[in-house]
Length: 318
Image 1 (cartoon, helix red, strand yellow):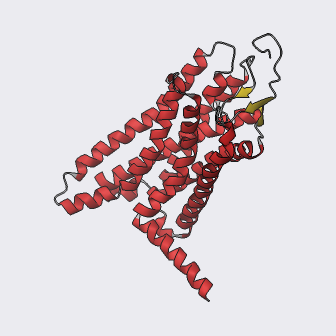
Image 2: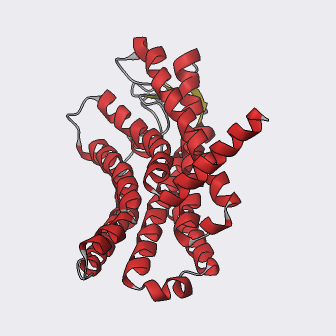
Protein backbone atom coordinates (compact mmCIF):
# COMPACT_ATOMS: atom_id res chain seq x y z
CA UNK A 1 0.00 0.00 0.00
CA UNK A 2 1.54 3.31 -1.08
CA UNK A 3 0.97 6.96 -0.25
CA UNK A 4 0.56 9.66 -2.87
CA UNK A 5 4.32 10.27 -2.91
CA UNK A 6 5.08 6.58 -3.36
CA UNK A 7 5.77 5.61 0.26
CA UNK A 8 4.02 2.63 1.78
CA UNK A 9 1.13 3.23 4.17
CA UNK A 10 0.42 0.53 6.78
CA UNK A 11 -3.15 -0.61 6.11
CA UNK A 12 -3.61 -2.68 9.26
CA UNK A 13 -4.83 0.40 11.14
CA UNK A 14 -6.75 3.60 10.47
CA UNK A 15 -6.83 6.73 12.57
CA UNK A 16 -10.21 8.33 13.27
CA UNK A 17 -9.76 12.08 13.42
CA UNK A 18 -13.11 13.02 14.95
CA UNK A 19 -14.56 16.33 13.82
CA UNK A 20 -11.94 18.27 11.81
CA UNK A 21 -11.54 21.84 13.00
CA UNK A 22 -13.28 21.18 16.30
CA UNK A 23 -10.63 19.03 17.99
CA UNK A 24 -10.31 21.50 20.87
CA UNK A 25 -14.02 21.09 21.71
CA UNK A 26 -14.16 17.28 21.47
CA UNK A 27 -14.47 16.96 25.25
CA UNK A 28 -17.44 19.34 25.34
CA UNK A 29 -19.12 17.74 22.35
CA UNK A 30 -18.78 14.34 24.01
CA UNK A 31 -21.09 15.43 26.86
CA UNK A 32 -24.32 15.73 24.81
CA UNK A 33 -23.28 12.74 22.69
CA UNK A 34 -22.77 10.62 25.80
CA UNK A 35 -26.06 11.75 27.36
CA UNK A 36 -27.99 11.03 24.18
CA UNK A 37 -26.40 7.57 23.99
CA UNK A 38 -27.28 6.85 27.63
CA UNK A 39 -30.88 7.94 27.05
CA UNK A 40 -31.03 5.74 23.94
CA UNK A 41 -29.84 2.73 25.93
CA UNK A 42 -32.27 3.30 28.81
CA UNK A 43 -35.23 4.09 26.56
CA UNK A 44 -34.84 1.13 24.21
CA UNK A 45 -34.09 -1.37 26.97
CA UNK A 46 -37.17 -0.12 28.86
CA UNK A 47 -39.27 -0.46 25.70
CA UNK A 48 -38.05 -4.04 25.13
CA UNK A 49 -38.69 -5.04 28.76
CA UNK A 50 -42.17 -3.51 28.89
CA UNK A 51 -43.30 -5.09 25.63
CA UNK A 52 -41.86 -8.49 26.64
CA UNK A 53 -43.49 -8.41 30.09
CA UNK A 54 -46.94 -7.29 28.92
CA UNK A 55 -48.70 -9.98 26.89
CA UNK A 56 -51.31 -7.42 25.78
CA UNK A 57 -48.57 -5.68 23.79
CA UNK A 58 -47.62 -8.80 21.83
CA UNK A 59 -49.17 -7.39 18.67
CA UNK A 60 -47.53 -6.88 15.25
CA UNK A 61 -46.93 -3.13 15.70
CA UNK A 62 -45.17 -3.59 19.04
CA UNK A 63 -43.24 -6.66 17.88
CA UNK A 64 -41.89 -4.66 14.92
CA UNK A 65 -41.11 -1.88 17.41
CA UNK A 66 -39.05 -4.38 19.46
CA UNK A 67 -37.09 -5.31 16.33
CA UNK A 68 -36.48 -1.62 15.63
CA UNK A 69 -35.35 -1.02 19.22
CA UNK A 70 -32.90 -3.93 19.00
CA UNK A 71 -31.44 -2.60 15.73
CA UNK A 72 -31.17 0.90 17.25
CA UNK A 73 -29.30 -0.43 20.27
CA UNK A 74 -26.76 -2.37 18.22
CA UNK A 75 -26.25 0.44 15.67
CA UNK A 76 -25.51 3.20 18.17
CA UNK A 77 -23.42 0.87 20.37
CA UNK A 78 -21.29 -0.01 17.34
CA UNK A 79 -20.37 3.66 16.81
CA UNK A 80 -20.67 5.61 20.07
CA UNK A 81 -18.25 3.84 22.48
CA UNK A 82 -15.40 4.29 19.99
CA UNK A 83 -16.49 7.89 19.43
CA UNK A 84 -16.37 8.59 23.19
CA UNK A 85 -12.98 6.87 23.45
CA UNK A 86 -11.73 9.17 20.70
CA UNK A 87 -13.12 12.30 22.33
CA UNK A 88 -12.08 11.45 25.89
CA UNK A 89 -8.74 9.70 25.45
CA UNK A 90 -7.73 10.74 21.93
CA UNK A 91 -7.87 7.04 21.03
CA UNK A 92 -8.62 7.24 17.33
CA UNK A 93 -6.81 4.09 16.24
CA UNK A 94 -8.98 1.35 14.74
CA UNK A 95 -7.87 -1.78 12.93
CA UNK A 96 -8.63 -2.17 9.23
CA UNK A 97 -10.79 -5.23 9.95
CA UNK A 98 -12.52 -3.42 12.81
CA UNK A 99 -13.20 -0.44 10.57
CA UNK A 100 -14.78 -2.61 7.87
CA UNK A 101 -16.83 -4.46 10.49
CA UNK A 102 -18.07 -1.21 12.03
CA UNK A 103 -19.00 0.15 8.61
CA UNK A 104 -20.86 -3.05 7.66
CA UNK A 105 -22.79 -3.29 10.93
CA UNK A 106 -23.89 0.35 10.88
CA UNK A 107 -25.01 0.33 7.24
CA UNK A 108 -26.71 -3.07 7.38
CA UNK A 109 -28.60 -2.12 10.55
CA UNK A 110 -29.68 1.17 8.97
CA UNK A 111 -31.10 -0.86 6.08
CA UNK A 112 -32.89 -3.11 8.58
CA UNK A 113 -34.34 -0.11 10.42
CA UNK A 114 -35.78 1.21 7.17
CA UNK A 115 -37.34 -2.21 6.54
CA UNK A 116 -38.89 -2.28 10.03
CA UNK A 117 -40.46 1.16 9.39
CA UNK A 118 -41.97 -0.22 6.18
CA UNK A 119 -43.30 -3.26 8.06
CA UNK A 120 -44.86 -0.97 10.67
CA UNK A 121 -46.46 1.10 7.90
CA UNK A 122 -47.93 -2.09 6.40
CA UNK A 123 -49.29 -3.00 9.83
CA UNK A 124 -51.02 0.40 10.08
CA UNK A 125 -52.40 0.00 6.55
CA UNK A 126 -53.92 -3.41 7.34
CA UNK A 127 -55.22 -2.28 10.74
CA UNK A 128 -57.03 0.74 9.26
CA UNK A 129 -57.99 -0.38 5.76
CA UNK A 130 -58.74 -4.04 6.56
CA UNK A 131 -59.37 -4.11 10.34
CA UNK A 132 -61.39 -7.36 10.33
CA UNK A 133 -58.58 -9.23 8.60
CA UNK A 134 -55.69 -7.74 10.61
CA UNK A 135 -55.19 -10.65 12.99
CA UNK A 136 -55.58 -13.17 10.17
CA UNK A 137 -53.06 -11.43 7.89
CA UNK A 138 -50.40 -10.44 10.43
CA UNK A 139 -50.09 -13.59 12.50
CA UNK A 140 -47.07 -14.11 14.75
CA UNK A 141 -45.48 -16.43 12.19
CA UNK A 142 -45.93 -13.80 9.47
CA UNK A 143 -44.41 -11.15 11.73
CA UNK A 144 -41.42 -13.38 12.43
CA UNK A 145 -41.06 -14.09 8.70
CA UNK A 146 -41.18 -10.39 7.83
CA UNK A 147 -38.61 -9.61 10.54
CA UNK A 148 -36.29 -12.35 9.27
CA UNK A 149 -36.68 -11.12 5.68
CA UNK A 150 -35.78 -7.56 6.72
CA UNK A 151 -32.69 -8.78 8.60
CA UNK A 152 -31.53 -10.97 5.70
CA UNK A 153 -32.08 -8.14 3.21
CA UNK A 154 -29.88 -5.83 5.27
CA UNK A 155 -27.12 -8.43 5.60
CA UNK A 156 -27.14 -9.69 2.00
CA UNK A 157 -27.30 -6.31 0.27
CA UNK A 158 -24.63 -4.74 2.47
CA UNK A 159 -22.26 -7.73 2.78
CA UNK A 160 -20.46 -6.98 -0.54
CA UNK A 161 -19.32 -3.59 0.83
CA UNK A 162 -16.52 -4.81 3.14
CA UNK A 163 -15.26 -7.26 0.50
CA UNK A 164 -15.21 -4.56 -2.19
CA UNK A 165 -13.46 -2.09 0.13
CA UNK A 166 -10.93 -4.71 1.23
CA UNK A 167 -9.69 -5.05 -2.36
CA UNK A 168 -9.05 -1.32 -2.84
CA UNK A 169 -5.54 0.15 -2.52
CA UNK A 170 -5.46 2.84 0.17
CA UNK A 171 -2.40 4.78 -0.86
CA UNK A 172 -3.32 8.32 0.13
CA UNK A 173 -3.55 8.27 3.91
CA UNK A 174 -4.80 6.11 6.75
CA UNK A 175 -6.41 9.09 8.52
CA UNK A 176 -10.23 9.08 8.47
CA UNK A 177 -11.75 12.53 8.98
CA UNK A 178 -14.79 11.16 10.79
CA UNK A 179 -15.93 9.81 14.15
CA UNK A 180 -16.66 6.33 12.80
CA UNK A 181 -16.00 4.29 9.67
CA UNK A 182 -18.45 5.13 6.91
CA UNK A 183 -18.62 3.70 3.40
CA UNK A 184 -18.13 6.92 1.44
CA UNK A 185 -15.37 8.10 3.78
CA UNK A 186 -13.39 4.93 3.10
CA UNK A 187 -14.05 5.08 -0.64
CA UNK A 188 -12.60 8.61 -0.76
CA UNK A 189 -9.33 7.31 0.74
CA UNK A 190 -8.80 4.82 -2.08
CA UNK A 191 -6.47 5.62 -4.95
CA UNK A 192 -8.23 3.38 -7.49
CA UNK A 193 -11.27 3.69 -9.73
CA UNK A 194 -14.37 3.42 -7.52
CA UNK A 195 -17.23 4.20 -9.90
CA UNK A 196 -18.55 0.62 -9.85
CA UNK A 197 -18.46 0.45 -6.05
CA UNK A 198 -20.14 3.85 -5.74
CA UNK A 199 -22.81 2.81 -8.25
CA UNK A 200 -23.51 -0.39 -6.31
CA UNK A 201 -23.80 1.50 -3.02
CA UNK A 202 -26.09 4.10 -4.60
CA UNK A 203 -28.28 1.38 -6.11
CA UNK A 204 -28.58 -0.43 -2.77
CA UNK A 205 -29.48 2.82 -1.03
CA UNK A 206 -32.26 3.57 -3.51
CA UNK A 207 -33.55 -0.03 -3.50
CA UNK A 208 -33.74 -0.08 0.30
CA UNK A 209 -34.17 3.31 1.97
CA UNK A 210 -35.50 5.09 -1.11
CA UNK A 211 -37.96 2.36 -2.12
CA UNK A 212 -39.03 1.79 1.49
CA UNK A 213 -39.80 5.49 1.88
CA UNK A 214 -41.87 5.54 -1.33
CA UNK A 215 -43.85 2.48 -0.22
CA UNK A 216 -44.44 4.07 3.20
CA UNK A 217 -45.81 7.19 1.46
CA UNK A 218 -48.07 4.97 -0.70
CA UNK A 219 -49.36 3.16 2.38
CA UNK A 220 -50.22 6.45 4.08
CA UNK A 221 -52.00 7.72 0.96
CA UNK A 222 -54.21 4.63 1.14
CA UNK A 223 -54.62 5.10 4.90
CA UNK A 224 -55.68 8.75 4.48
CA UNK A 225 -58.14 7.79 1.77
CA UNK A 226 -59.70 5.22 4.10
CA UNK A 227 -59.71 7.62 7.05
CA UNK A 228 -61.49 10.42 5.20
CA UNK A 229 -64.24 7.97 4.24
CA UNK A 230 -65.13 7.51 7.91
CA UNK A 231 -68.47 9.08 8.82
CA UNK A 232 -67.53 11.18 11.85
CA UNK A 233 -64.75 13.61 12.64
CA UNK A 234 -64.05 11.90 15.98
CA UNK A 235 -63.57 8.56 14.25
CA UNK A 236 -61.18 10.13 11.75
CA UNK A 237 -59.12 11.79 14.49
CA UNK A 238 -59.02 8.63 16.59
CA UNK A 239 -57.90 6.53 13.64
CA UNK A 240 -55.22 9.03 12.61
CA UNK A 241 -54.05 9.14 16.23
CA UNK A 242 -53.00 5.49 15.98
CA UNK A 243 -50.54 6.50 13.23
CA UNK A 244 -49.10 9.56 15.00
CA UNK A 245 -46.19 7.81 16.69
CA UNK A 246 -45.19 5.98 13.52
CA UNK A 247 -45.24 9.16 11.41
CA UNK A 248 -43.08 10.99 13.96
CA UNK A 249 -40.38 8.28 14.14
CA UNK A 250 -40.34 8.02 10.34
CA UNK A 251 -39.60 11.75 10.06
CA UNK A 252 -36.95 11.53 12.79
CA UNK A 253 -35.24 8.63 10.99
CA UNK A 254 -35.44 9.61 7.33
CA UNK A 255 -34.73 13.35 7.63
CA UNK A 256 -31.14 13.03 8.95
CA UNK A 257 -30.65 9.82 6.90
CA UNK A 258 -31.42 11.51 3.58
CA UNK A 259 -29.49 14.65 4.56
CA UNK A 260 -26.40 12.62 5.52
CA UNK A 261 -26.65 10.44 2.39
CA UNK A 262 -27.09 13.35 -0.03
CA UNK A 263 -24.42 15.59 1.52
CA UNK A 264 -21.86 12.76 1.54
CA UNK A 265 -22.33 12.09 -2.16
CA UNK A 266 -23.35 15.42 -3.66
CA UNK A 267 -22.67 18.14 -1.08
CA UNK A 268 -19.07 18.82 -2.05
CA UNK A 269 -19.25 22.46 -0.92
CA UNK A 270 -20.56 21.67 2.56
CA UNK A 271 -17.93 21.89 5.30
CA UNK A 272 -16.72 18.53 6.70
CA UNK A 273 -17.98 19.08 10.23
CA UNK A 274 -21.54 19.50 8.89
CA UNK A 275 -21.22 16.10 7.17
CA UNK A 276 -19.97 14.52 10.38
CA UNK A 277 -22.59 16.11 12.65
CA UNK A 278 -25.34 14.95 10.26
CA UNK A 279 -23.92 11.40 10.27
CA UNK A 280 -23.78 11.34 14.08
CA UNK A 281 -27.30 12.74 14.43
CA UNK A 282 -28.46 9.95 12.14
CA UNK A 283 -26.81 7.37 14.42
CA UNK A 284 -27.69 8.91 17.80
CA UNK A 285 -30.95 10.85 17.68
CA UNK A 286 -33.47 8.31 16.31
CA UNK A 287 -32.55 5.62 18.91
CA UNK A 288 -33.03 8.19 21.67
CA UNK A 289 -36.23 9.76 20.30
CA UNK A 290 -38.11 6.62 19.20
CA UNK A 291 -38.84 5.29 22.73
CA UNK A 292 -39.81 8.79 23.90
CA UNK A 293 -42.25 9.27 21.01
CA UNK A 294 -43.87 5.88 21.55
CA UNK A 295 -43.90 6.37 25.32
CA UNK A 296 -45.61 9.76 25.07
CA UNK A 297 -47.93 9.27 22.10
CA UNK A 298 -48.95 5.60 22.54
CA UNK A 299 -51.48 5.33 25.35
CA UNK A 300 -50.96 1.63 26.05
CA UNK A 301 -47.18 1.93 26.41
CA UNK A 302 -47.57 5.10 28.48
CA UNK A 303 -49.96 3.32 30.85
CA UNK A 304 -47.57 0.39 31.24
CA UNK A 305 -44.64 2.73 31.98
CA UNK A 306 -46.65 4.61 34.61
CA UNK A 307 -47.82 1.32 36.12
CA UNK A 308 -44.22 0.07 36.26
CA UNK A 309 -42.97 3.31 37.87
CA UNK A 310 -45.84 3.26 40.39
CA UNK A 311 -45.02 -0.33 41.39
CA UNK A 312 -41.37 0.65 41.98
CA UNK A 313 -42.48 3.56 44.17
CA UNK A 314 -44.75 1.27 46.20
CA UNK A 315 -41.89 -1.21 46.72
CA UNK A 316 -39.65 1.59 47.95
CA UNK A 317 -42.30 2.70 50.46
CA UNK A 318 -42.53 -0.81 51.90
